[in-house]
Image (cartoon, rainbow, N blue to C red; front, side, top):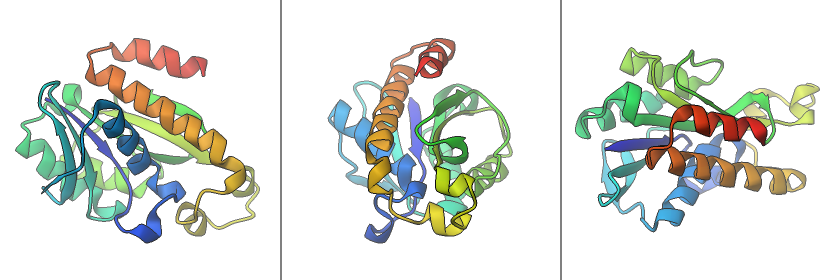
Length: 190
């Protein structure tokens, strides 16, 4: 089984916000493989593709408590964290639209990832970061909390849509067994 978790906040008021990019990526992935988020378990909405051995999850615990849901998912699906888990999320430390895939590392400044690392007591798992740092954020024109919970600005819509598509493609390649190094190489060429 391969578990792909997209991070975000539940509820319509958070749709299309920078902090919900992880949800947007896994929504696109589910659409591509033809599955729906029709299962609720482990404090998550889940789409399963049993034929391909893929479970896609959107934790419903709100971002800062994502680890609680991820821990339950890992146990329920009996996941080898280092080989079968990948978490996709927004990253304000990366330029808008940039994608970065790593096999391990710290949580950085992301509270959802900090909670996952704390709950799993593990840093050796794949993570796909989607850059959301805009010029306005970089220049200090907006506060971080206001920014991450704001709707994606229309002028960045095309770049973010491209990043979401690229991230969904990368996750699908990983789930289909493409070596991490090859997927990383493709992302770095973007």
